[in-house]
Image 1: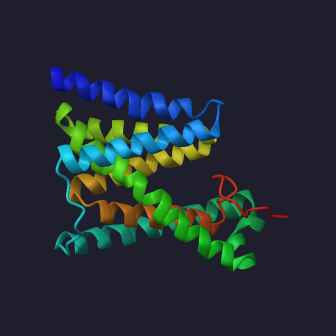
Image 2: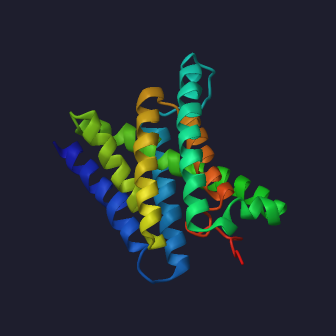
Length: 212
């Protein structure tokens, strides 16, 4: 019981209070310090308490994963292309067509400095710490998607919250099935980079989307 209380307090501080606080205006340096402290705590818990290994192995489930991702990505690519075309044709593939260097830089930075830490926090850590508190796996994945969306509240953008909630559902299902930080990071990077590529960067607060 005491352990569960500790986990609930930890959950509230890391996944509710801290993200909501970032939506308020206060020192950028303080926000950065809180982020680093929180991330450091998460890494410590994963390594010293949960005993998580970050070694990557080639597993049979990779084949099933990629088959599913191909289908999902095809649907997402079609829907988002139609959405951008309908909303603003000038934004369609704007950055790769006008600034290839910026496009490549953002893909790399987003993949390694945004996607991987997010998946380490919101899937690897979240599942290892809190899954035991939920009898319903569907409810657990739903809660995971809610807090993942909440992590983006500082953008103050409804579209961002909707897309990250949907992404949270997909990523939660992937991690539940594979238990692989690498695979869920690949999926996250694929979808996120595609949204930027297709022209949704301005809608999602990516730089370089100053369309005419």
